Length: 263
Image (tube, rainbow, N blue to C red; front, side, top):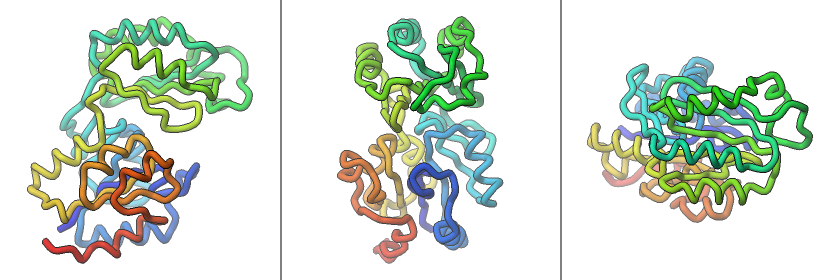
């Protein structure tokens, strides 16, 4: 039996689409007849559960929140929290960010979304629907300081130049800051990666390296693309991501060309 662990956005889907096209969907269904398939994503558990229902997937495991959290169905296997002793400095950094931003805080079960602006933003990743969101910074501070299960902070920045916010958070230490999309920063514990969950499965089920396949396309996929022999990176990826995959592909269906390996 082979195991395929795949990123979702831009890997199973086209860039800027949330829809798995029929060709890729047919391949996933074909794969699942004899093998295991699961998604490893920056998205949260709720989103991945909706995918499971929408496409009638049968996966048990979910690697979510950029690898911070691993679930087997409803059972939490692990959650890599942002260190409590870094939380005050994170709030200080947020207060120093120039320009408007939306912020999404994620723990092992829930997400909490806030904004620090009042009016509509132009040409920004902070979409129109953010206008109606909570603007209570004190509530945001409380979650950051008190929620010990907090594993991800997503910042949707008005300014396209994210170098200053990245510098602010890097100076805190023990954080990984990923610029996963234009205007978007995702901040997690420095030990977080999708590889963590894959290694857990590899050890638990004694999966041979030759029977393990991973596909990805973004900054948060770099570790798993580097760490495993059968790694496939989409040709639409950034140059720094392209160089980490062992094989470059146009579509995930191309991994079928590599299935006849010695076990």
